[in-house]
Amino acid sequence: MENEKKKRNSFTGSLGFVLAAAGSAVGLGNIWRFPYLAAKDGGGLFLVIYLILVLTFGYALLTTEVAIGRKTKQSPLTAYSEIKKGWKGLGILAGLVPLIIMPYYCVIGGWVIKYFVAFLTGDGVAAAEDGYFNGFIAEEVWPLVFFAIFLGASAFIVFRGVNKGIESSSKIIMPILLILVIGISIFSVTLKHTDVAGVTRTGLEGLKVYVIPNFDGLTVSGFFTVLVDAMNQLFFSISVAMGIMVAYGSYVKDDQNLAKSINQIELCDTLVAVLAGVMIVPAVFTFMGTEGMNSSGPGLMFVTLPKVFESMGFAGNIIGCAFFAMVLFAAITSSVSVMEAVVSSLMDQFHISRFKACVIETVIAAIGGIFVCLGYNKLFFNITLPNGASAQVLDVLDYISNSVMMPLVALLTCILIGWIAKPKTIIDEVEKNGEKMGRKVLYIVMMKFLAPVFMVILLLKAFGIM
Image (tube, rainbow, N blue to C red; front, side, top):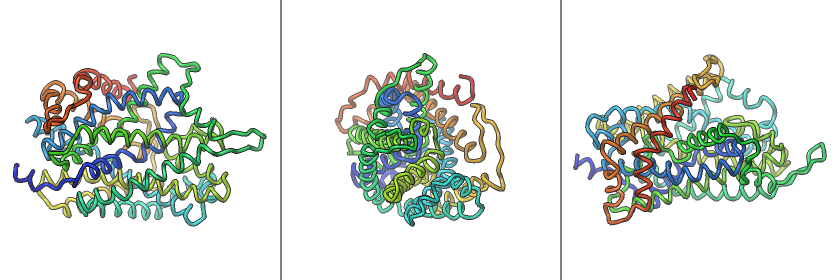
């Protein structure tokens, strides 16, 4: 084991790790889910609750997974049993999450490429037409082609390894992504539009809708809904409970200041998550009013926003192209991290080369992705999930991975670290070079008491019990 640890690749420095980890966290969940939830859940009220959870619940889980990775120098599949013998099952569960996510994430990544190409070629007006999105995903060939392109790009980066692939691409993509996010956010706030009824709305008014808490009609059950939504969003926002941060943590050098790096990841990811709302909510409000903000998921990104860009006239094609380029960058960095969690697990468990592990995971993702694409035409079905939502192939995979398995992984991690291996295991790893863990007491309370309660609530919600 010691020889394997010594031979393991590592990030060249803290910047590479922070950018790669932040790139993993900044994905489609932030961009199409965060703004919708913020608009639905009282604007600033959701933001305040989310920020509190990031600094407490999110911090505890993020610190735990990164520290487990660095301490064991193992991937999620094998790391937990290194912490405590007999906990291999948790590693298997954590390893299955990215395996399930990868196929449908790459399908959605293919959709992003399609829209980027549409706006790049000046076809944004057509993309804004009713039925364009549903017509595209119902096709039998093109969704598979764009899916294959996205999967191939992700696999190529992962195949190149930790330094030449993940770290190098993150150092290029993340700065560009941040520039685009900030630029589009500023543009969105400066918008102004008068509709056919003569009503004038501005981006600044939309920004107020987004950031100012709205307590009108708020009830105890309503507040609970906001809390649950914010907790669910954290999984998307900081990439925890899916093995990614354990894998990335295993590539962090022992002499690196772990506490500082974790704080930087928190800051970077939270900044992008909040700015995702600044990009989208003011623009949608300006051109479509409050009713336009009711879309979520694919509906927000692939139906509502193209209509907003089309309403901007000539500038809409340019802004639309920049927006989908930014989304594509975010999607790539996240899919790379999801794939790396699986590839590193295969390498550690079966002692095979990176090339073989990449080939195996690419084939698995390709087969799964084909089924997801066909789920909108030849394999279409519609079932009702335990939480009451209607679903087909993609939704079923998303429900299993995000609503059930991720809270379960987080709950079991809290039990392992909070009560069996004890929080000191993680605290000692964070402080091994003499650094001080700033939120030590908070960390202990979260892992032992509060976080497990949060996870039980999310699981009950997923099964329609609450």
